[in-house]
Amino acid sequence: MSAIALRPAAASDIPAIQTIYSHAVLNGTATFELTPPDEAEMIARFETLTRQSYPYVVACDGDGSILGYAYAGPFRARPAYRWAVEDSIYIAPQAQGRGVGGLLVARLLELCEAAGFRQMIAVIGGSDHMPSIRLHERFGFREIGIFQASGFKFGRWIDTLLMQKPLGEGNTTLPDEKTYPGTLL
View 1: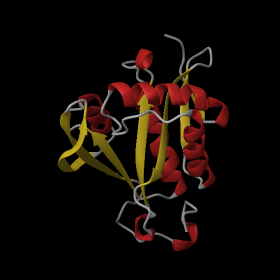
View 2: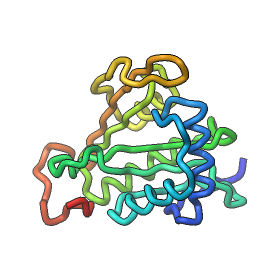
View 3: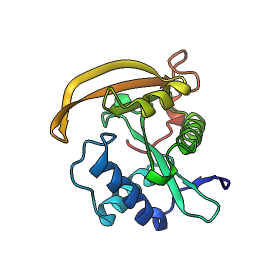
View 4: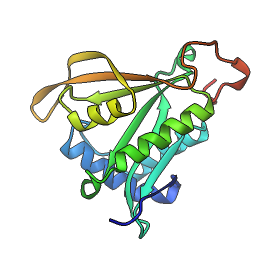
C-alpha cells in the first residue's frame, strides 16, 4: 500500500469527489440523496463551505488519485448552532478498509478544534451502518439518539443515528464571540 497524503480540497478535485459521492448516493445509505448531484452542484456546495472557512480535505494515494474526502459544515443554520459542525466522510469503494476514513476524521477533528468549534455531530444514515458507527466511536463520538425510520431508500425504511463529540473545551467554558470560527453571520 502506498502512502496516503491529506491536503485541503481544491475545486479541481470536484470531478473525483463527485464520482465518489455518486457511488455513495447510488449504493449506500450514508446520504439520503436519491439522485447524484452533477459537478456544477458539487462545486457550488464546495464553494459555499470553503467560502465560510469550513474545513474540506481529501486523502490522496501516492499517484495523487483521490481516495476519499471529508468536510465539516454547519450542523444547523440558526445562529445559536454556530459552534457546532456536522461531519461528512466519503471513501472511494476501492479505498475502503485501508484506514482512509480514520485519517480523514482525525484531520477534520484537528481542523475544527483549531478553528474554535465546540461540538461535532455525526448524522449517520442507518443505525446498522457499522463501519461509520465504529469509525466515529474510535474517535470518541457517542450515540445521542436515533430518528427511527426517518428515510426511505432502496425500498426500505432507514433510521438516522446521531453521534456527538465535544471539541476543545466543549461546553465546559463559554465561547469567545469575537473568535467565532465561521462566517455564517
